[in-house]
Image (cartoon, rainbow, N blue to C red):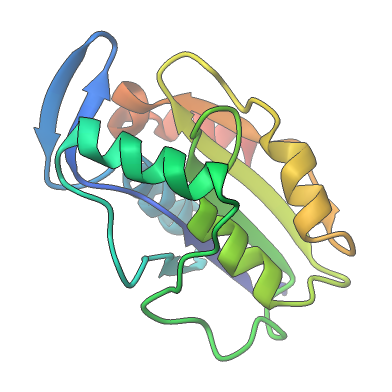
Length: 167
């Protein structure tokens, strides 16, 4: 029996939903991660920056774009001691300008994913997976990166059927 980790980055606060702003207590990717955990029995691990982005959407965008432009690797609040016990890692993130949030790069570059399967899932409001699969392959070159799924963020709370089919 394989052991599963669901590692995900998600942001609450003011978020963009198909043309308008809305304040949320839970980020879209977190909804999807919780559904995957329920369907697979996997363990959840939230990727959190020590210095989080602003709850204000426009300020968050400025901060995240600056981190991406400068190729920063934000320090995380915590890290799994090891990923050795896991065979499959579901990796969740919102699509930030066609790729992963920089904190997800921090997570990926910390570990050796040799012999691991990574199953990416992202939330977005129209841009799908973008170039994130190639970026995951580059950051975790020894992993087997499988086909990912892109979930419209505003649909994430009700995405169980799509996630179940993908799993």
